[in-house]
Image (cartoon, rainbow, N blue to C red; front, side, top):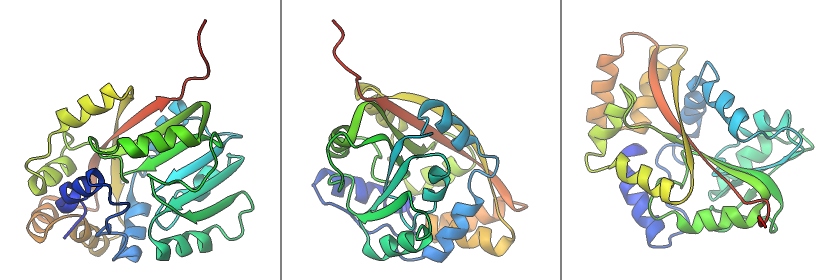
Length: 250
């Protein structure tokens, strides 16, 4: 069973205060998820928008839900320091191995609700398709505010279910998911939103189909594979940002 087919269960767990529910893709198939990470956003559109709305050059960054640390080196090229936070210990070890020779990066065991960093210690908090799925993530939003310095920004990268074809596959596994409700929630929480259109491109069909199988139910994965004639497809994202006030206006 893939990520989107269990999203409602994970959101419900967050609402019940559970620290972390097993992620059915990367927790169980980290090698396949590595293939997925390499295939995502091949034109760099998400990174381009992130650089505009959450510039991390010379700043301190925390990547919440960093998994095996795939995005940590990208931030580390320009950031002053990067910390990856991940609730699953085996993935923390993979992340540490990935960044072992990078002096300005580390990875730590923790969750969105309990980030293992001091108050006001980072300038950018980044979370990509992890924890912040809409109503129920208020505790994580509060925790992000705690670790952000005044003027710092929380940047959430989430999949856009309105964007075809990937969004159609997601909706097939999550027929009760309401993107309008999620949008209204983040608007109430003070977030700005940017829509981003990307391509996922794979080296071969076996890789493409393996990724579909860890993200969707078997029925939806089979349908998706039949509708993709080549090695790539379109995927939409939302980049949500909220900046912590820099001070009181008098």
